[in-house]
Image (cartoon, rainbow, N blue to C red; front, side):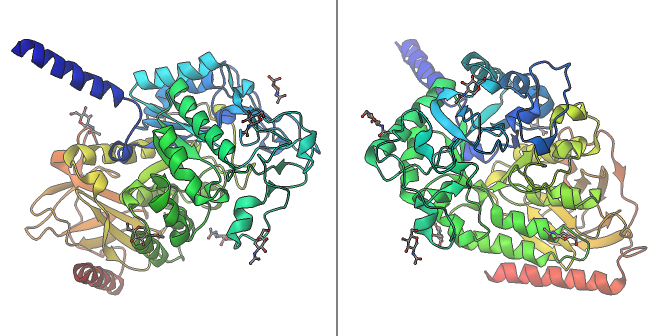
Length: 532
Ligand SMILES: *[C@@H]1O[C@H](CO)[C@@H](O)[C@H](O)[C@H]1NC(C)=O
Ligand SMILES: *[C@@H]1O[C@H](CO)[C@@H](O)[C@H](O)[C@H]1NC(C)=O
Ligand SMILES: *[C@@H]1O[C@H](CO)[C@@H](O)[C@H](O)[C@H]1NC(C)=O
Ligand SMILES: *[C@@H]1O[C@H](CO)[C@@H](O)[C@H](O)[C@H]1NC(C)=O
Ligand SMILES: *[C@@H]1O[C@H](CO)[C@@H](O)[C@H](O)[C@H]1NC(C)=O
Ligand SMILES: *[C@@H]1O[C@H](CO)[C@@H](O)[C@H](O)[C@H]1NC(C)=O
């Protein structure tokens, strides 16, 4: 009897656990590290092939779901557990003035058919199954706002849009979105241009709404996707999204391409789990762009986000993606690149890394930022591959050490024009935009929360010991970031470590004056934090 009860309890628990293996709730989502691929550019089915791929041609270069599946270990090797893939549905094959192909997947023709350029239904299912077998997750990109037309605005000349009826009220009548401050226009007019018009779906129509909700529900269950990324969210009425997201039944992150936290926050507050952190992106993109930029805008972005968003720990943090010029296209200094990445890992939120960052890709505005990754040879010895691995490993060790790490907000415990000290227990990060030519500097760090503790800077593999008040003097070399975690919690980080030798601050670097203003600023911000 007892045994039978125990057994059925066990079965019940086991089935619960099984249900939770794939799709993630908010709490699980916070622990994820996401790697974004452009499916067509990430990996080929034939791993021995290496065709050229001129991004300016805007044509399919041959990447497939099978290719992505075969390269999951390359992704996992950096510590990512989630892969965001391009939209999977059938796209238009021709455009009005032969302006390239839909290799990116954002030019929908029929949502009920797969894009055969990327493979078959079996290939896609195999990608998901293999990912799950490696404790990895697949986030699928979906476009709801529009389809694409092959005949400019004369979309009725296209024969079919799958379930959407050309002759009915399934589309908004034609007008271009021209005034982005007019939300009605943003939601009901069309994106695109005369070459590739993007007919705007009438997401006010009840049968369109139920078509979308049923579609996303069956798509997620058919392919066992774990999360969705939603394109052009602000171009659909905000109250469309809650039912769509709950029909999906998985974590949803939305793209609202706007730097105003109040505008974007409304979407997280009212519509979906997460949104991309464009306000922080713009601030980082500028602050780490040059050694003369100021760090203060990053602090403002963080503070403003916390005022506006319901939950900043769920935001998607990034410095590069397929829509913006790669951060690396305008910043060649590796120290600045490393600092910008340390910044997104140092604060709350979910890190999103765009394929190619680990290989030092530098493509500018679309289409230049969609380079073929096979041309890199998937070199796992590259400096940024190793660095990103370290960033994910520090985060992993911190999660192991603290069950609240993912829910902790970061606090700025030191700040001046060019340096920030960020505390997100148990991790302390120092980021700087002084650049790789900067002289070495000692920085006095207080309020670490770790008293008389050996801390490891997992970037340089150097150890420090804090005093009983939790203070220590960190040594910053070549403008690199430093990320500290108690040595006792370091997990697999840094096989061998060296004890820091610099005990006197400002020896060769930051002058005493600059140094004290740094400490002062730190104290001021600590006091400010205590007040609020
Ligand atoms: C586009 O081309 C692919 C490959 O030739 C084909 O399978 C698909 O049906 C075409 N799509 C459309 C919308 O015609
Ligand atoms: C906003 O755009 C809509 C649709 O184009 C238009 O009807 C309306 O007049 C615009 N409103 C303002 C205030 O410009
Ligand atoms: C398209 O038309 C068909 C036939 O009238 C109808 O069953 C279907 O619901 C329509 N689709 C949408 C999305 O309105
Ligand atoms: C980065 O600096 C360059 C050169 O000073 C400038 O042209 C560019 O606009 C800057 N970009 C950002 C995002 O600040
Ligand atoms: C979002 O919700 C938070 C609290 O839940 C609130 O403080 C904030 O003002 C809201 N933001 C917007 C833009 O509605
Ligand atoms: C976290 O802990 C697990 C289980 O002890 C261990 O396998 C893993 O390597 C740790 N992760 C890191 C990044 O230290």
